Image (tube, rainbow, N blue to C red; front, side, top):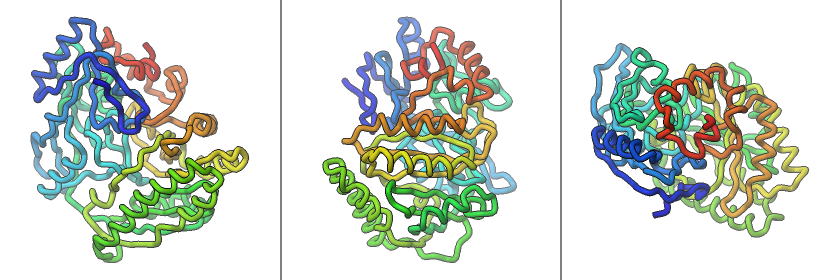
Length: 437
């Protein structure tokens, strides 16, 4: 069969597709593949834009390993450690946690990924005091290239733990992940169109917009002077839940249906894009509502697109957006998709895009029927001037020699990979590009 990812930017024809249901079955498949010199890669939801899951060897689906295995005792702050099967999808994990009065501390805006895929590619949400999924990991169980089932944590094989919790599958097959989770909580969302320059004036100041709210992100449509600002706070003004009719109109008809219509129209008639973008920037009116955290964090995405995202120092956001704006105006590139900006705290995960620096994320998108290479390459060159680190699961062109300069612990990660997988059982074309052969 031919496997394709969600964005249709990668495909593969694996020799074998296996769907193990436990660690022993995973180990047996890995030993069999290693004995034949066949490569093994794990696939989750296929939401990565790169070819990181592609293989012509054995493709492993962990969809059957999708349950909560253990819930630990509550700490003084109500947090717990929860061990889950690595194949569990985020939407199921959130539902199962909620039934126990628990929640993930932070999330991105998509809940279709597997937990293993989310942590392995550095998936993140937004919030200047919060890290990505990998920072919530407390232990990992995995199958290494020799077929051994190994437990890792910051105290037990810590180097392997670092590569396992964020290493694009280079350490082995993750079979279970132990996460720190918190008491279930609600978020109050405030979404409003705001002038672009007003937002840019306050995003780099710790006491400004980003520092004074729990979770801040915004979407800017090229050729417009307005952004759609989204602020989520744990404490709010007592807003009511979003009415189902308003949700249907805003999220389905305008966000998904409207975006589908406008991108298709602009893909055919590029001259309309500036006017359409200016209209789209104001189409979603202000709203304030409250709901369970996982329902507020995430949104349904029915429009297919291509995406590249870079992590940069927070102070680089303003000059970079101005540079991108200038390039788009100068070239007339047809871009009917918004640019997304998010934020994260510094962390200490070896291959995290936020490693040891407060971070801003700038994501550029392109409609599925429009070429993206020139646009993405131009933005990538701008990011390089600000020591930008590409998202491991989104389109980029960087190779090992460039990534080594961006990650102080890069060679430490490769040393672990050399020790745990000397024969490169878990390698593919993508890992060879980003880590070297």
